[in-house]
Structure formats: structure tokens, C-alpha cells
Length: 449
Image (tube, rainbow, N blue to C red; front, side, top):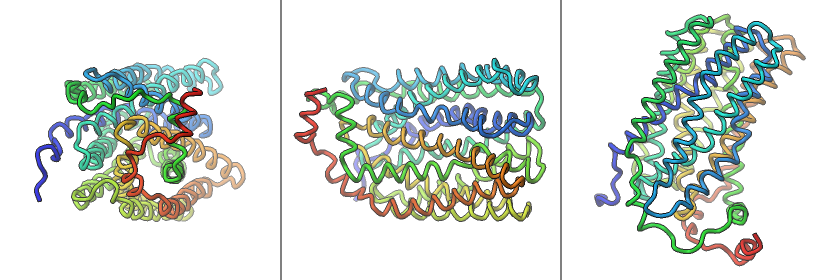
């Protein structure tokens, strides 16, 4: 049976929305990849404070739930998502010119109070912008697709993210193969220009207020805190939270240390380690596209098995990376990074589809905000943990190989535990019961609030 026009995904519109992620990747890679490498390897700073800076935006993640809740409350016939998206992305862009001042000050004095203060300020602005705009962008994508195709729409825009990260890595690697202050300034300005162009293109005419008028629930909205309590009272939501939390910690603990790993263990230069993103990103693109195609007829709530396979195929390469770190077997490094990307792509399709399923019509952005908050908060904790584990292991062992091997091994173990946790999440049951009204206890709590 062919889908009707109302059930079909508007592919051109979804692809246009996906270009938003191209702009986002050019912003994110400057902070999560290039700057980390400069501070840890080129300027020889400790990984722990650098990782803490990278984690700062994730530690502010509850803002994403609030932003989603507020966008859900926007009245019919108005722009619900775009004000929050632009209100977040513009501060992110404006934080980037601060970064070259940070590197210049810390190059002169690694303990510069002004340098670290500027770094904190830049990452604070950047983090707030990320959180205000992230969940509302996902809600915009979800709103643009029919219910049966929402997981597919979210997976398609995710393809743009993983394609653009390696693309940005190659471009940045060519623009600045070796760090110097003038090259870093040029890199930041070019990255800002590219990012703004793609974000503006993606968001131009992206939200159509008239489309939201018929679906708005006329009943009064629940207050914020009682709504959160109601969401958390469902055991399926709690297990899903644990799955997302441990998955984010385990998958991203390498984020701040992967490029320094190439420099510290194998002596690779800045241009070579920046291309790490291209290697594993190429694997993500291949598996993401293949998995989206293979699962295109599945509803979002039917993707639990895909997520489990992806978890296993992401954990195995991380285990292999720990072996490579111990043996310093450089010949296997690039193939294993590609394998890591292949597994991560499968995991991403499964997890993103489950995100789309674990929402309700009335509180779509609030649920997506909660899940985004979980991923961001624990991704940040993972990034910080990766840097801290590396530093502690290095202090204890005096060996870079043992330090990095420890990070990768713990990541692999965490991903395998996630498979067991996901077994406890009844996603189809959540979808069948998603239209349940607030219970009596939650209604009383709302009255008290």
C-alpha cells in the first residue's frame, strides 16, 4: 500500500533543513577539535581543564528542556521554533572570535587569568546558544514530517551532520596544517562565514505557522515542573534516560583526547590529527546512509534492534583502539577509526529513531528537550571524564599509551552495558500509550505549582 501525500516525507524540505547541520559542524569542530588540539598538544596544557571547558555547554543542558517547553507553549499561527533556534545560533557564532585571543594569551602564559576567563566566557555563550537552539531545531524537523516518517526525517538531517564533520575537518586541516596565531584567526573567520551561510539557508522559510494551527491542543498547558515529574514517572522514560546517559558518556569520552592521542602517541601533526574526523566520519556516512535505506520502511519505534547492533559495532573498535594505543601499531589506526564510524552510524540511526518515538504530540519539544539535555549533559561529563582519566592514568603510569588505552577501554565497556539497558526500554509500549492524559497525582501537583 503506497503512502498518501499526507504520509509522504517532503524530501526537498528535509534536505534543506539538513544543511543547518553543515553550518553547525563548522562551528562545533572549531571548539571540540581544533581548539582542543591547540591547547593540549601545541600549547602543552593539561587535558583536564580543556576538557572541562568543552564539557561546560553540556553541563548547562537543563536549558534545552526549558527552551523546548517554551517553544511548545507558543500560540498557534506564530513561529514556534525559529525564534529559539536563531536566538541560540547567533550567540554561538559571536563566541568564536574570542578563541584566538584565548590561544594568544595562554601561549604567552599558561596560567593567564584573563586567558582562562575569556575561554570560560566564550564557552558559556557558546553552550547557552547550543542548548536553546538544539532541541527546538529537532522539534522543527519533527514538525515538518508526517508521524510515520519522523524517525526517517531526523535520521536524514543527521546524515548532514556526520558528512559535514569530516568535510570541515579536511578543510580546516588544509587551512591550518601547522598551528600559528595568524592561521588560527583566518580559520575562525572562514569557519564563521561558512557556518552562517548554511544556517541562514536552512532556516529561511523553514517554519510555516499556518501548518501548526490545526494540531494545537486547546486544553491549558501543564506547569513546567509538574510536567517534568509526569514525564519522569514513566519507568520506560527512566530506562531510556539511562540508555542515553551511559551511551553519551561512553561514545564521547574520546572527544577531547582523540586528536591529542595521535599527537602524543604517534607524533602526528595538527593537519594529520584533524583528519581523524574525516576517517571516522566517512565510516559514519556510509553506514548512516546504508542503515537509513535498509530501515526506511520501519517505524521509529521499531529501531531498538538497530540501536543494539550499532552499540556493539561501536564498542568493538574502541576496544581495538585501546589495543592500538598499547602496541603503538599505527598501521591499524585509520582502519579502526573507519570501523568506529561505521558502528557509530548504525547506532545513530537507531538512537535518533528512538528519540522520535519517545515523544508525545502535545509535548514534543519538551520530550526532545529532555532527551537532548540527557545526551548533552552526559556527553559533557564523558568529555570531561575522558580528559580526567587520561591525566590520572598518565600521572600514575607515566605512559601516554596506558593513559589513552584506559580511556578507550572504558568507553567500550560502557557501550556494551548500554545494550543490556536498552533491553528494558519498551518503546512500542510507550508509543501505544503516548496519548495518556496527566494522572490525578500530576494534576494535583500542577494545581499546587
